[in-house]
Length: 234
Ligand SMILES: *Cc1c(COP(=O)(O)O)cnc(C)c1O
Image (cartoon, rainbow, N blue to C red; front, side, top):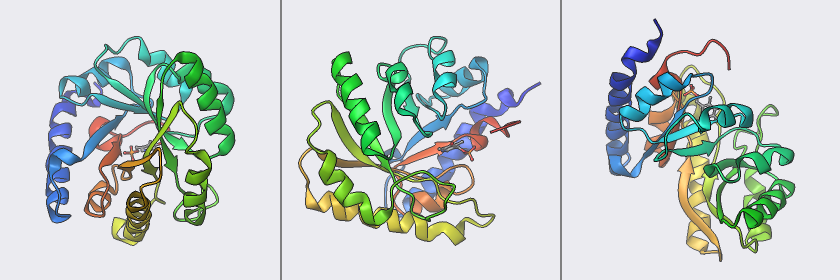
Protein backbone atom coordinates (compact mmCIF):
# COMPACT_ATOMS: atom_id res chain seq x y z
CA UNK A 1 0.00 0.00 0.00
CA UNK A 2 1.40 3.37 -0.86
CA UNK A 3 0.94 6.57 1.07
CA UNK A 4 -1.99 7.50 -1.15
CA UNK A 5 -4.62 6.91 1.46
CA UNK A 6 -3.27 9.78 3.52
CA UNK A 7 -3.08 12.34 0.80
CA UNK A 8 -6.31 14.17 1.50
CA UNK A 9 -5.44 14.54 5.17
CA UNK A 10 -1.88 15.55 4.31
CA UNK A 11 -3.24 18.31 2.09
CA UNK A 12 -5.53 19.41 4.87
CA UNK A 13 -2.63 19.52 7.32
CA UNK A 14 -0.43 21.48 4.90
CA UNK A 15 -3.25 23.97 4.38
CA UNK A 16 -3.62 24.49 8.11
CA UNK A 17 0.09 25.03 8.58
CA UNK A 18 0.17 27.50 5.69
CA UNK A 19 -2.80 29.37 7.11
CA UNK A 20 -1.10 29.70 10.48
CA UNK A 21 2.18 30.81 8.91
CA UNK A 22 0.39 33.31 6.67
CA UNK A 23 -1.33 34.76 9.68
CA UNK A 24 1.97 35.10 11.52
CA UNK A 25 3.30 36.90 8.45
CA UNK A 26 0.30 39.23 8.42
CA UNK A 27 -1.28 37.76 5.30
CA UNK A 28 -4.24 35.65 4.29
CA UNK A 29 -4.08 31.90 3.71
CA UNK A 30 -5.86 32.32 0.35
CA UNK A 31 -2.96 34.39 -0.92
CA UNK A 32 -0.63 31.40 -0.76
CA UNK A 33 -0.78 28.96 -3.68
CA UNK A 34 0.13 25.34 -3.11
CA UNK A 35 1.98 23.57 -5.89
CA UNK A 36 1.88 19.81 -5.32
CA UNK A 37 5.25 18.50 -6.48
CA UNK A 38 4.47 15.21 -8.17
CA UNK A 39 7.94 14.00 -9.17
CA UNK A 40 8.28 10.22 -8.90
CA UNK A 41 4.56 9.93 -8.10
CA UNK A 42 2.18 7.92 -10.23
CA UNK A 43 -0.97 9.22 -11.83
CA UNK A 44 -3.36 7.58 -9.34
CA UNK A 45 -1.61 9.18 -6.42
CA UNK A 46 -1.55 12.56 -8.14
CA UNK A 47 -5.28 12.32 -8.75
CA UNK A 48 -5.85 11.97 -5.03
CA UNK A 49 -4.20 15.33 -4.48
CA UNK A 50 -6.33 16.81 -7.25
CA UNK A 51 -9.43 15.35 -5.61
CA UNK A 52 -8.33 17.05 -2.40
CA UNK A 53 -8.49 20.34 -4.28
CA UNK A 54 -4.89 20.94 -5.34
CA UNK A 55 -4.99 21.92 -8.99
CA UNK A 56 -1.44 23.21 -9.35
CA UNK A 57 1.06 20.44 -10.06
CA UNK A 58 4.82 20.76 -10.27
CA UNK A 59 7.38 18.59 -12.02
CA UNK A 60 11.10 19.14 -12.18
CA UNK A 61 11.74 16.95 -15.21
CA UNK A 62 10.34 17.52 -18.68
CA UNK A 63 10.14 13.81 -19.46
CA UNK A 64 8.08 13.06 -16.38
CA UNK A 65 5.75 15.96 -16.98
CA UNK A 66 5.13 14.71 -20.52
CA UNK A 67 4.36 11.21 -19.32
CA UNK A 68 1.78 12.35 -16.81
CA UNK A 69 0.28 15.29 -18.65
CA UNK A 70 -2.23 13.39 -20.76
CA UNK A 71 -3.41 11.25 -17.87
CA UNK A 72 -4.31 14.11 -15.59
CA UNK A 73 -7.51 15.82 -16.62
CA UNK A 74 -7.86 19.40 -17.71
CA UNK A 75 -8.46 21.93 -15.02
CA UNK A 76 -5.01 21.35 -13.57
CA UNK A 77 -2.13 23.70 -14.11
CA UNK A 78 1.35 22.33 -14.59
CA UNK A 79 4.44 24.08 -13.29
CA UNK A 80 7.95 23.33 -14.48
CA UNK A 81 10.02 23.81 -11.34
CA UNK A 82 13.36 22.16 -12.17
CA UNK A 83 16.28 23.12 -14.34
CA UNK A 84 15.16 23.45 -17.95
CA UNK A 85 17.45 22.79 -20.89
CA UNK A 86 16.87 24.97 -23.92
CA UNK A 87 16.41 21.97 -26.22
CA UNK A 88 13.45 20.79 -24.15
CA UNK A 89 11.43 23.99 -24.14
CA UNK A 90 9.56 22.92 -27.25
CA UNK A 91 8.06 19.92 -25.48
CA UNK A 92 6.46 21.81 -22.64
CA UNK A 93 5.65 25.21 -24.09
CA UNK A 94 1.99 24.36 -24.73
CA UNK A 95 1.60 22.35 -21.52
CA UNK A 96 2.79 24.43 -18.62
CA UNK A 97 1.23 27.47 -16.97
CA UNK A 98 4.36 28.73 -15.30
CA UNK A 99 8.07 28.02 -15.65
CA UNK A 100 9.69 28.66 -12.25
CA UNK A 101 13.29 28.00 -13.17
CA UNK A 102 14.40 30.54 -15.78
CA UNK A 103 18.02 31.42 -15.16
CA UNK A 104 19.67 32.42 -18.45
CA UNK A 105 19.22 34.74 -21.40
CA UNK A 106 19.59 31.77 -23.72
CA UNK A 107 16.62 30.09 -22.10
CA UNK A 108 14.56 33.27 -22.26
CA UNK A 109 15.27 33.55 -25.99
CA UNK A 110 14.28 29.96 -26.62
CA UNK A 111 11.06 30.36 -24.62
CA UNK A 112 10.28 33.51 -26.60
CA UNK A 113 10.80 31.67 -29.88
CA UNK A 114 8.66 28.69 -28.91
CA UNK A 115 5.93 30.74 -27.25
CA UNK A 116 5.62 32.90 -30.34
CA UNK A 117 5.26 29.81 -32.51
CA UNK A 118 2.65 28.41 -30.15
CA UNK A 119 0.79 31.71 -30.16
CA UNK A 120 0.92 32.20 -26.43
CA UNK A 121 2.45 34.40 -23.80
CA UNK A 122 4.48 32.27 -21.41
CA UNK A 123 4.51 33.19 -17.75
CA UNK A 124 7.88 32.71 -16.10
CA UNK A 125 9.66 33.20 -12.80
CA UNK A 126 13.33 33.97 -12.49
CA UNK A 127 15.25 31.50 -10.37
CA UNK A 128 17.63 33.18 -7.97
CA UNK A 129 20.49 31.44 -6.20
CA UNK A 130 20.23 33.37 -2.97
CA UNK A 131 22.48 31.15 -0.87
CA UNK A 132 25.26 31.10 -3.46
CA UNK A 133 25.66 27.33 -3.19
CA UNK A 134 27.52 26.03 -6.21
CA UNK A 135 25.19 23.10 -6.64
CA UNK A 136 22.20 25.38 -7.09
CA UNK A 137 20.90 26.86 -10.30
CA UNK A 138 19.81 30.46 -10.53
CA UNK A 139 21.20 33.88 -11.13
CA UNK A 140 22.88 35.74 -8.32
CA UNK A 141 20.87 38.24 -6.26
CA UNK A 142 23.08 41.11 -7.46
CA UNK A 143 22.26 40.34 -11.09
CA UNK A 144 18.49 40.02 -10.84
CA UNK A 145 17.65 43.61 -11.66
CA UNK A 146 19.92 43.87 -14.70
CA UNK A 147 18.73 40.51 -15.89
CA UNK A 148 15.12 41.68 -15.74
CA UNK A 149 15.93 44.91 -17.55
CA UNK A 150 17.53 42.83 -20.27
CA UNK A 151 14.51 40.62 -20.86
CA UNK A 152 11.53 42.89 -20.49
CA UNK A 153 11.19 43.43 -24.23
CA UNK A 154 10.16 39.91 -25.20
CA UNK A 155 6.57 39.96 -26.39
CA UNK A 156 5.69 36.36 -25.70
CA UNK A 157 7.14 36.26 -22.21
CA UNK A 158 5.71 37.71 -19.07
CA UNK A 159 7.86 37.70 -15.95
CA UNK A 160 5.57 37.04 -13.00
CA UNK A 161 8.03 36.91 -10.13
CA UNK A 162 10.96 35.14 -8.51
CA UNK A 163 11.77 31.66 -7.27
CA UNK A 164 14.46 30.12 -5.12
CA UNK A 165 15.45 26.75 -3.73
CA UNK A 166 16.94 27.19 -0.27
CA UNK A 167 19.72 24.94 0.98
CA UNK A 168 18.50 22.01 3.05
CA UNK A 169 18.64 22.73 6.74
CA UNK A 170 17.53 20.44 9.56
CA UNK A 171 16.33 23.57 11.30
CA UNK A 172 14.65 25.89 8.77
CA UNK A 173 15.31 28.88 11.01
CA UNK A 174 18.87 28.70 9.76
CA UNK A 175 17.73 29.55 6.24
CA UNK A 176 15.14 32.17 7.10
CA UNK A 177 17.57 34.77 5.80
CA UNK A 178 17.39 33.23 2.30
CA UNK A 179 13.64 33.83 2.11
CA UNK A 180 13.94 37.24 3.69
CA UNK A 181 16.61 38.34 1.20
CA UNK A 182 14.60 37.23 -1.82
CA UNK A 183 11.45 38.87 -0.50
CA UNK A 184 13.35 42.11 -0.18
CA UNK A 185 14.56 41.90 -3.79
CA UNK A 186 11.00 41.05 -4.86
CA UNK A 187 9.57 44.10 -3.10
CA UNK A 188 12.29 46.43 -4.39
CA UNK A 189 11.70 45.36 -7.99
CA UNK A 190 7.95 45.50 -7.59
CA UNK A 191 8.22 49.08 -6.43
CA UNK A 192 10.27 49.99 -9.47
CA UNK A 193 7.37 49.07 -11.75
CA UNK A 194 9.54 48.01 -14.67
CA UNK A 195 7.58 47.66 -17.93
CA UNK A 196 6.39 44.12 -18.61
CA UNK A 197 7.84 42.81 -15.34
CA UNK A 198 5.21 41.75 -12.85
CA UNK A 199 6.13 40.78 -9.33
CA UNK A 200 3.04 38.72 -8.54
CA UNK A 201 4.54 35.45 -7.36
CA UNK A 202 7.29 34.64 -4.94
CA UNK A 203 7.89 30.89 -5.20
CA UNK A 204 9.80 29.62 -2.20
CA UNK A 205 9.37 26.98 0.46
CA UNK A 206 9.33 23.18 0.27
CA UNK A 207 8.16 20.50 2.70
CA UNK A 208 10.89 21.14 5.20
CA UNK A 209 10.78 24.92 5.25
CA UNK A 210 7.50 26.22 3.83
CA UNK A 211 6.23 27.75 7.06
CA UNK A 212 9.32 29.92 7.41
CA UNK A 213 9.10 30.81 3.71
CA UNK A 214 5.45 31.86 4.03
CA UNK A 215 6.22 33.92 7.13
CA UNK A 216 8.85 35.69 5.03
CA UNK A 217 6.54 36.46 2.12
CA UNK A 218 6.24 33.39 -0.11
CA UNK A 219 2.94 33.20 -1.95
CA UNK A 220 3.74 30.00 -3.84
CA UNK A 221 5.05 26.96 -2.04
CA UNK A 222 6.24 23.80 -3.78
CA UNK A 223 5.37 20.80 -1.68
CA UNK A 224 6.11 17.16 -2.42
CA UNK A 225 6.94 15.04 0.60
CA UNK A 226 4.47 16.65 3.01
CA UNK A 227 1.64 15.77 0.62
CA UNK A 228 2.71 12.51 -0.99
CA UNK A 229 5.06 11.01 1.56
CA UNK A 230 8.69 10.22 1.08
CA UNK A 231 10.09 9.51 -2.36
CA UNK A 232 12.27 6.51 -3.07
CA UNK A 233 14.50 8.67 -5.17
CA UNK A 234 14.75 12.29 -6.16
C1 LIG B 1 11.36 18.24 -5.27
C2 LIG B 1 11.22 19.71 -5.29
C3 LIG B 1 10.36 20.36 -4.39
C4 LIG B 1 9.56 19.65 -3.32
O1 LIG B 1 10.37 19.04 -2.38
P1 LIG B 1 9.77 18.43 -1.02
O2 LIG B 1 10.87 18.58 -0.04
O3 LIG B 1 9.45 17.00 -1.31
O4 LIG B 1 8.57 19.20 -0.65
C5 LIG B 1 10.25 21.74 -4.50
N1 LIG B 1 10.93 22.44 -5.43
C6 LIG B 1 11.76 21.85 -6.30
C7 LIG B 1 12.49 22.69 -7.30
C8 LIG B 1 11.93 20.47 -6.28
O5 LIG B 1 12.76 19.89 -7.14
